[in-house]
Length: 94
Image (cartoon, rainbow, N blue to C red; front, side):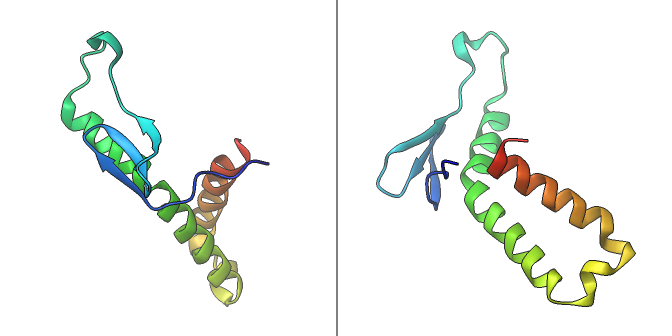
């Protein structure tokens, strides 16, 4: 499995860049066919840039929960299932 480009990532205009300035992603509305609002494209860029920290936070949260009785608390079952699914989607492409 290939790992993702290490974070942190930053947003410069509509480009998501790694620390050395290399391009991770660009957000655009090709030929402006969809007329995506700039505010929406800015928000998408920020969300993508936060991805490495979000993944690390979810992994740490699940690791911490596994060390407590919280993981077996039925009130949090759906949240833990969703967190595991999001991690799997990011790391395994599912």
